[in-house]
Length: 400
Image (cartoon, rainbow, N blue to C red; front, side, top):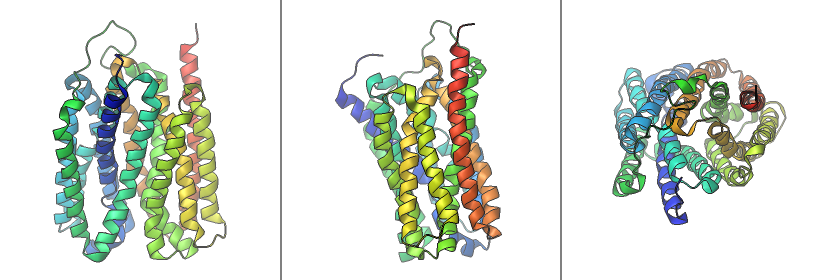
């Protein structure tokens, strides 16, 4: 990799981060508005959760395919296409007159969302100096968390002041503004398609699928997605029901979690400087997050403490994020970056497609403690999965 200046690296990291924030922002266009959409369309939480299932099933399929497109055509055109589709989906959500229309535009939003991780990690891994990759992953994760935090912070107040339709039109305008910004700075995102290299594991278009660690990473991201979907879609409401949290406080819990996650990623970027300890960092961080989740679900805590505990859980999860990305980096052949990230992060989409169906059913049956127990169990599985990635990678690398 050629040596690049700090200024050039910072510019690329910033532009990729802004784009990534819109991916995460768009994932939460609907979830913060569930109480209003439930009334407007006469549906239950399970039906609303199914909209997320549609979104992430489509995103999963696109994500796996877009990794091949990125390696073949380069990341920049794929990025602009994805952002354009997210803009059209937000306009569609705002204009929807039926549940069926929401479902149709969930498909469009999933098409747009699916391109980002293969695009982003290809740009970072190929344009950023290796010595700065840990911090690049940290910024990438921070911007994603800030995108998640921005969605409820922007959409809920606008909905309360005007309507959910106005909130979604404003969201569409924000996505359009980011598209224009990236178009103006498009030269910074130029990257040629992957060039053929000497044959090694991963050179064949599907050879990388034979690497066991890739599939262990896929499983890890599946369970990580389960954690995200519970926190994003149902945790705030279930905590409100358990601890009599005022609605205005409950609406801010997700934003507090995401801001805490962004702060944790700053710390995690420094911890990721040593790749050898990434599994231990992931294990310790998710262990702490699971303890907080169990406390919210089963301890008698005052209402004022709930947002604070959301923040603590976010910090712990954020610390794990850069080391989590290094798990994939260390398992991916250099010449198959887009494909590996596409397949691995498809696990993220599948998890976010499946889990809302089950957790939405728990919510409809008022099993609020069950929501938090499910969250803690998923966080525990993540700890085991991280060390399994390490075990499989070392087994493959060991001499015969």
